[in-house]
Amino acid sequence: MLTVYTESEEETLNLGIKIGENIFYPSLIALIGELGSGKTTLVRGIARGMGIKARVKSPSFIIINEYPGVIPLYHFDLYRLNDPQEINSLGYEEYFYKKGGVVVIEWADKILEFLPSDYLEIRLKVEDLERRKLILLSRGDKKYSKLIEKLRENTKRGKIDVNTGNGNIPS
Ligand SMILES: Nc1ncnc2c1ncn2[C@@H]1O[C@H](COP(=O)(O)OP(=O)(O)OP(=O)(O)O)[C@@H](O)[C@H]1O
Ligand SMILES: [Mg+2]
Image 1 (cartoon, helix red, strand yellow):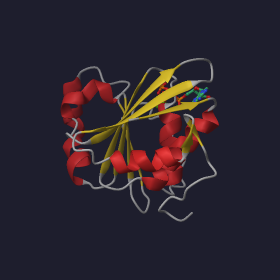
Image 2 (image 1 turned 90 degrees about the vertical axis):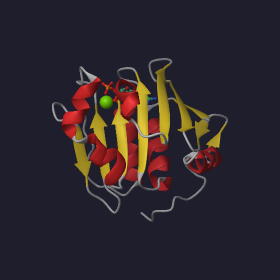
Image 3 (image 1 turned 60 degrees about the vertical axis):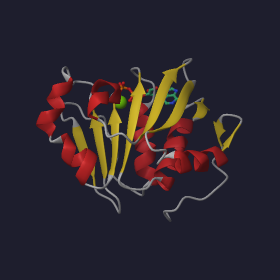
Image 4 (image 1 turned 30 degrees about the horizontal axis):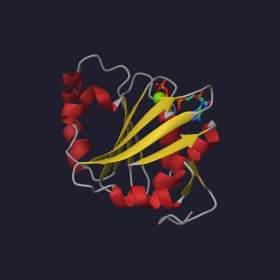
């Protein structure tokens, strides 16, 4: 488990970039956090860290956005999902189990029972106007522990340090 505090949108973006630089695939990242806690900002950073040039937007009506890249990113935003069963109609299994890219899900707490056993859980909490607390956990078979350790190396006293460490994807 790793706890990171961010004090601006940019700092959350930087954490996302570090995750994106070090992510492997297939992988699944479950984001759990209230409105405005920084979920989309984090996805934006992850995309940037993965070398994806397109701008990540919150899907308004579409629930999944796909961003092609060296590794594709599949961005789910389940804000508008009323009933967990609705994700069956999206063909979610294809994304969660077969496509082999990086899947990031906003409001993942709505569909916990559909998630694979292994995933990276990130809980986001609004502590203040600009202060966010992010808790990263490797769920299941500890597949994500190495990534968390790598991020820990880039963290000093709970803050992401942008000046240390290298990712595995050249920019
Ligand atoms: N430390 C911070 N990290 C991220 N965003 C921050 C931070 N401080 C302030 N903000 C602001 O909070 C908002 C976060 O928006 P964002 O869309 O990333 O959140 P979200 O969790 O995806 O929201 P939603 O639940 O509506 O999808 C932005 O307006 C951003 O400027
Ligand atoms: Mg969002």
